[in-house]
Length: 452
Image (tube, rainbow, N blue to C red; front, side, top):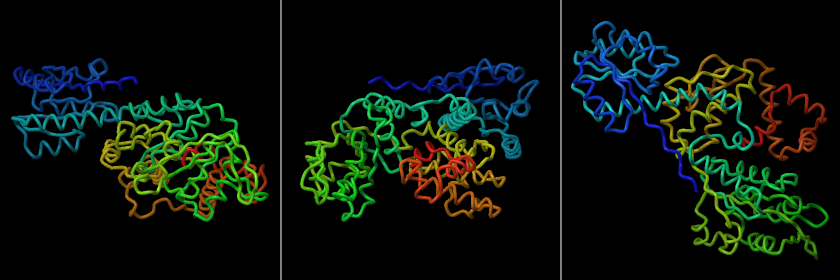
């Protein structure tokens, strides 16, 4: 296993005309692991930013020539690093003016080292994320293949992509473990699509959503009536989501299918030979399910030849900005609006939220943000508020019909695994009409399937 990349140290540009204060601040920052540059004057700082590229500027307020407030006024609010002002002559009016003019924070001398480091750390982190967001459009446009399916650059998501690539071309059974909304079915589809079985069917069964009396029918089929998922997926992949909820009688039959490669449909006298790869997923501890008697231990041993752990969104916060921009760009294209800008406040809201619903929740918030932007306003904080008044109600009947059709067609695409002839039949329209509506509504079949 390769070692995760080491994050580049934060950098600070210190501007203070007091030599001893500059030296003291440099010592403090370097001891905390920062890269620190220091200048005695604010004049010329703007010209040096491109070379130094600091994550944050720490500037005195009162200096000969150009003051810290003058420097603040010259900084480009869209691209410049945040400015933290520090002064021995701090007063409330000066602090208020500085914040109103765009300063990140205001610190009085003598300063509390821990508080100063905390403020600088927060400012640097926000700047890096905002800076990354400005580059995301170009980066996302260059993404292809697995990078476009499993978006992100943190070590956890890079390792996940590596695991998928390493295991896709094998036939081993894999158990995907992760919280709800982390993208287990997305990973299962990637394992199928990148492997030798890609041209064969991919059948997904949500074990938690199937009534027990329908489970055997859906999985094993009925003689002369229904093929069942295992036979329908012959040559391909069967994905069992929430496998720990699979009824115990079905688990025994499934174990025989895995061991013998044979399926006996209900009412049949002879088994049918099948060749399927089994991928399973759970959002709970399978060991606990075995201990509680809900999951057969021998079945667990068959489905967890390899285990892939999917990281929660909390464990990959550095991917938040990239993922959010990716999803908002996707929905901006669907709803035919400009991609909304991401402010420092938006980045702060993304970082502050706990994301219990993981990537699925982030996608929903991104769609809500785009719908707000279509009406000329909104923010990430407002998009996170599920109790806020609805701002996404279409203005006209025509828009309302388009939203309804888009949701209905997307639901049918997911229900029929992207088989467009089946989608058209389910919707009661011709294939040509379906294609025309998909183009008109800006739907992307791959994006719809990936959103599950």
